[in-house]
Length: 194
Image 1 (cartoon, rainbow, N blue to C red):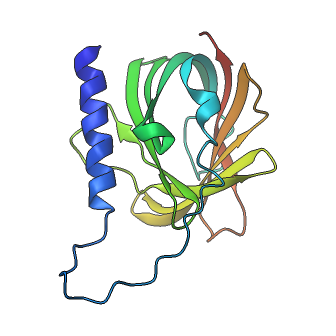
Image 2 (image 1 turned 180 degrees about the horizontal axis):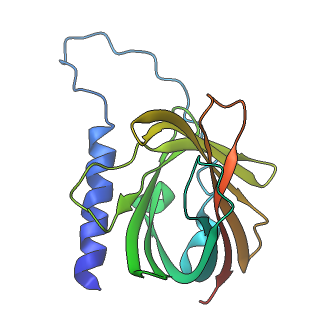
């Protein structure tokens, strides 16, 4: 557990460092820096802790399928960098076996947006999904990214809603027509354990 936590912290720090602007010479005229937008800095504070989740997931996405599978799981969320980042260590008990993943998140005070990545446990050293980016408005967090599915461009949307001290709702949707229509393909009902 300690090794996993340290690996997650190291990965999160690498993401933060890669997002830093390039160093300037001391002779350069400093650019005007706008005041940081910290309005969403604490949006994911509710999620720190251990959660059980019940998922419904489409077996085939963007294929007109109505064949859903259901499974349970556990999500452990850790706050990092004084709230500017956090990470989920996730384990799903899927019908075909245990599926693990890691979801690091980082807050950008220049844009006021959160970025969320997914590291797939089936290929953790492989390419990381493009981050979904967004924010919470009136208690609902909506996050978008451009990605590909079966070699074709898609749009991805995450929505966090129905958030209380002990419950949350998350869903993922894909659009195969540039955002004209959306297919919800993964729904999680989440309950806090501790």
